Length: 136
Length: 220
Image 1 (cartoon, rainbow over the protein chains, first blue to last red):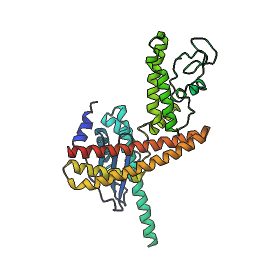
Image 2: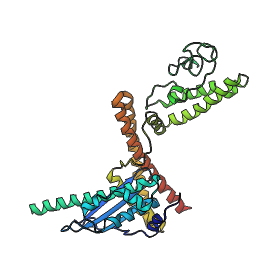
Image 3: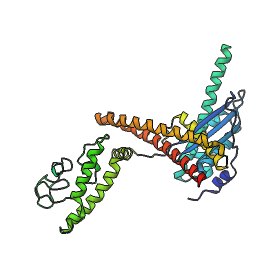
Image 4: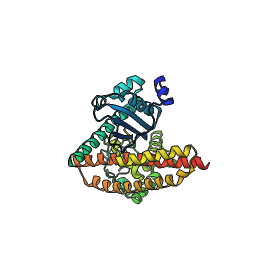
């Protein structure tokens, strides 16, 4: 199956590969996987606690070209957005942008799940942080 | 030796040869003529739909049936009987291959009961396993780029995953027993549990294969 030019572009020049310090209270980490194809995707966001804006996003994905391209694009799409805006991001945006064929749609779903997982992780940490701050 | 074949209960139908009513399964009870074989693996072996099967009993049934159905026995029979013997022998081999393996057996029953196996949308992998899988992939990446220091770590991963598989298999045996004792909705609930366990199992066994492949490529 041939990959679209956009997928190839992200696959060959993935944006924002790498990792952020997962112990940083402002960093949220989302780790998701698809048992069938063996893909595993880690997506991290660094949030400004004052504004709620995602200031940085990094990913590392082990999987097929479409999974790598989907997570690469996902980091681009959410950077500069607030966590509430990022939470609204639908996988269909990724599907359209990358012209993913039906058999690869699950890769975009995985990327959407990774974003949500990262945001939830950040919120969880922020909640713990504020309770800790209050009780201190 | 032929007794259990004669008292087959499932899949009874009229004999195509002598016309006896409800007399035939793989063979006709009256004229012993071979019949059009059932494609259902459990019916073929005249077994109830249980997930826990006695391997010895299954093997005995297989040997008996392969003798009785063998095409060599039908060389001088009608074309119809020769065809049935060929078809039945082929189903017999498929059925035995699938039913004697607990994993393939469970997947067969799940398919027959309308549970899709190997659904890519299924994401039930426990988070702690994902963590491990991610670390494993990092180590494999390092191995590919020539870092041999990760070899002991990979060996450790491999052993961990094999342990997990052993635990999963024990869990499956228990689920099989519960499935066989249950009925209706309860049975379907257990089947759903078996399906997600099998998905997890496949995921982990793919990982073991991947590690083995990379280690073999390293040593080649």
